[in-house]
Image (tube, rainbow, N blue to C red; front, side, top):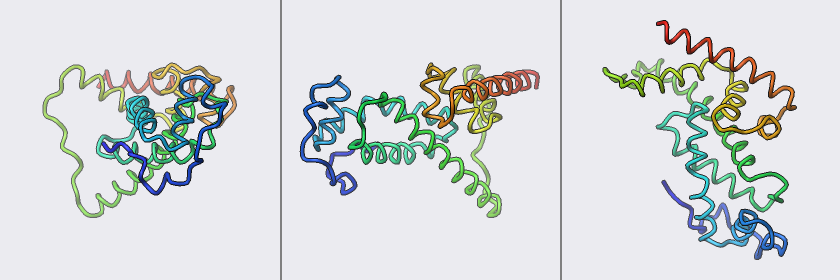
Length: 202
């Protein structure tokens, strides 16, 4: 996976130096200040610090493995373009999750179009393995259960149950009031539980 070296034209329009407030703030804020100043080492540090969490989150939101690399590139390209506007009012993780959620929606739309085109062209889907280990079965069941949730329910369910965020942290990522987060989580849990039970009975 490519790690940006700072010479891409996308990231050329950056301030010449970080603010004194950024340099004096918490370590992550100081790191962001160095990124905004064009410090190539800081870009790489920020990328290494967050790419695993972003990749895992995109997978949980349904991004397929074959699409993951492109999705990651797009998420971090957007993150780096947006960093000059970051003021530290929220955690960078919250911002990153929001970008991942947007990218996951794009990936789902692309997958839907791709699947339709593949069907029209008579292409076969990826071959399923003939034997599955218990861990693979569990992972497949969880993935299938998550697929039964709506996109909004899935986002809230993954952030709360799998990522450990609070309702207050999830609300700005999901773009809805906290009360809506709890409602989506309630229905998402119910759908997830029903899907798991259905899978287990089959």
